Amino acid sequence: MLSSADFQHRMAIISDQIQEACDKAGRKKESVKTMVVTKNHGFEVTKMAYEHGFRLFGENRIQETQEKYAQNHGLSLELHMIGHLQSNKAKIACELCSCIQSIDKIKTLLEVQKQAKNLDKVQDVMFQINTSLEDSKSGVRDINELWPLIDQACHCPNIKVIGLMTIGPFDAPEKKIRRCFSDLRELGNRIISRYPGINLKDLSMGMSDDFHLAIAEGATLLRLGRILLGERYA
Ligand SMILES: *Cc1c(COP(=O)(O)O)cnc(C)c1O
Image 1 (tube, protein in one colour):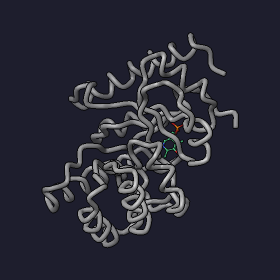
Image 2: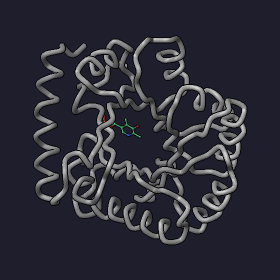
Image 3: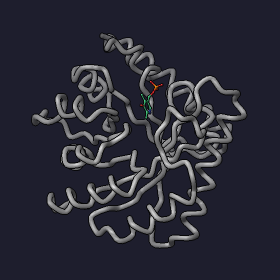
Image 4: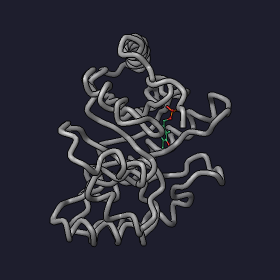
């Protein structure tokens, strides 16, 4: 595992890089939040990041999330589900996660509504959009599938839509990556004008290799794994 000093060193470098990207884009650094993506790392890594001040954590598999976070760990942290969610796992996701970023189907949305209602909570969600149209990625690909999904969400009293999420293409030219991120931002703007009732505040985009591009295109929430924590050992 990464040592605490190592982590601190990485944190400092990334913090400078985020600042630099914000300066270039004419944005305030406070407008960009950073989530630590702890998938494939043990709970001790979460704890270390927490001790260095991070409060927002992302996981992509329900089972791993449950193993790490189901017991009371005594930390007041916020957990987001950023991986594909099967509707039969919606209950655990609602129990453990303050936000589910990966909603892309009506079936999952309705199951989340049901489980959130049972828990008597309002569940924050984001819609995952497949902006790169890569087959390997989940997310809504076709805008004609997005509108019914949002219409449905508007009728779910236990669901609050707070943003959009996308994963940039891997190994693509910079221009293409930026296009995916700007597409997400523009889609957000279309949603805001079409659904004035939705407070779409977050654009979750940008990972270890492309977060500077995401900042340039308006990201409000970066999801950083490897660059902060090193390669995963699982
Ligand atoms: C793993 C993962 C990340 C973090 O990726 P890194 O390249 O390690 O920064 C971000 N978002 C999602 C959806 C992921 O699955």
